[in-house]
Image (tube, rainbow, N blue to C red; front, side):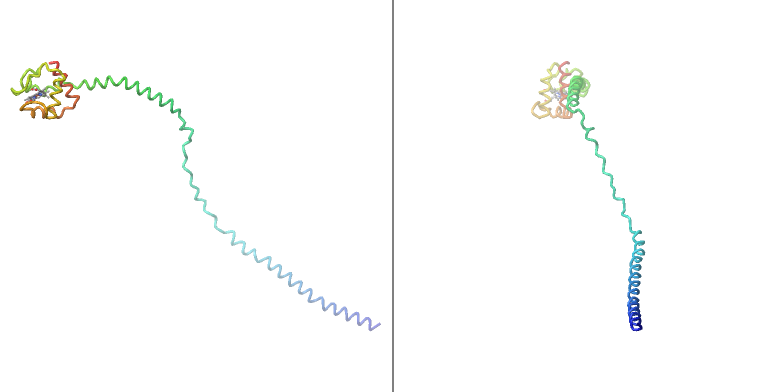
Length: 181
Ligand code: HEC
């Protein structure tokens, strides 16, 4: 009986001595695990201060005019405008022609009377023909000839300088005036 008890005791002791290292190793592994879990917490705090991206680059697109506004009824508007313009032209045309006719041939002839006489009754400088009673066409032929240097006598240079600065309309007004003298 003593032998059996001592054997059992011996086995118990052996078993106990075997248990200790197992418990220690388990505790050690538990401690390691807890350390591993704690480590990331310290790192995470830094990451919360990470830069925020700049929200500046939001460029507003230029507002394009709504295409609907362009849809004016152009054909009608143009037609109306053309009609209106035509009416205005019809109204203005006679007035414009009247303005052209209003170039005062009589006033322009004031420059001529020193040589040709108040009514064109004189032979200018004793050389020219008497232009009183000339038709408008005959006077215009003389004017164009003087301007071109293809008309006149010895003193045609005098007349060329006299009419050089007159426009065609002014010459017509002059010719018209002379024809009525
Ligand atoms: C400085 C004097 C002088 C003045 C100013 C003058 N004329 Fe003359 N005119 C002459 C003479 C000179 C002639 C003839 C020239 C020639 O052909 O030899 C002449 C000729 C003419 C003729 C043609 C007559 C012809 O003999 O065939 C006409 C038309 C005429 N003049 C118109 C005018 C009118 C219009 C003006 C005003 C804008 C004017 N003259 C101003 C001296 C003048």
